[in-house]
Length: 313
Image 1: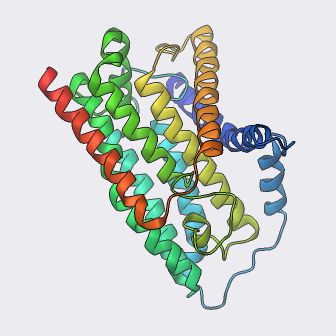
Image 2: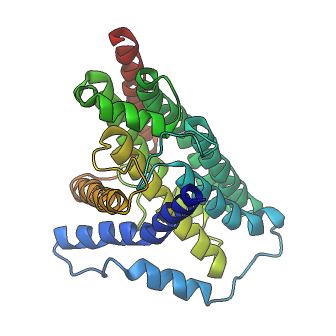
């Protein structure tokens, strides 16, 4: 019972921290650009405000449009429960691994694209088409980049990968490890709609991808979409932090180990979020036809990581 309570606790921690992570990136970007910016906790006020507003739904929308926010948020919460956030138990008390996480995220993206098409909005259709182009290259890359670690661990379980990296810390500096981390970081930018693939702070129709699909949402529906997007960013950064740099994560349910695990994941997420903020103030958005080139590079990096790991065994 204690294990399940800890699992539920770390899932709630991930859900609660997600808006703060997105808000921290916005605040740091504003500071780097010489602006005051909104405080890091501003997304909490935004979500609360949206939950208090009335949802306006097009009369041409079907049940898909109304069900998508719940499905996007729900699948992301389930993935957050599979990812080792604070504790990585070696004993398999969680059903689900790398492939379950990848395809659950893909399920939410698929329904979000359907919702963009559902209202008949030209912007929604444009965003859905672009999103599917991006996802076709990012989802295999996510799987390949983590498979490079799974080959050494002999398992696709996140906990087993973390345990293996902790027992062999020298592997974290190997070429396969570093190539896989670079591939996953590029994919994180694409999957979460960050620069240089997408710009989360604009509504310019010529550049929108994620924002175009959610343009018709309002009220509580939009709150769930925005919260789910922030949680998806936290999930990807947690994968990059705890699979490739698992030091500090708790391997037992002792209170002190859990506190150290919580502190370490917050510190690592802060470093990765700062890296994203610095990157977004230094690069411009790529033209749409150049995005597949960048994602192809990430796929090649992940493939090289798998080959390097396989040959080094």
